Image 1 (cartoon, rainbow, N blue to C red):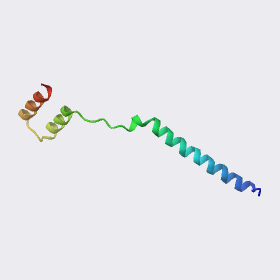
Image 2: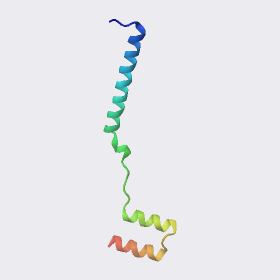
Image 3: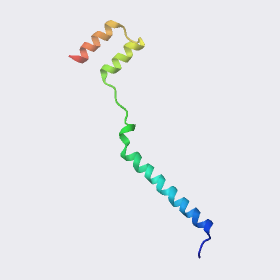
Image 4: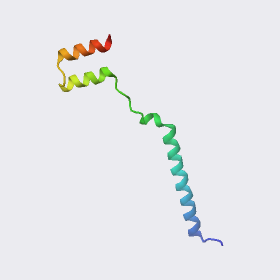
Length: 69
């Protein structure tokens, strides 16, 4: 039932890979704040639309005043 040196090395490699995989999973869960996307505010969306030329200056000012009031 004893394994040769080659078999023991493979077991050590598999166990090491298992622990590395689990460690990366735990690290990813603990540092999940890096993956959080910031949601845009209404004003940021409005500014982007104005910058892309989807709305003109008058409409931008009117909608901005509506948002801020």
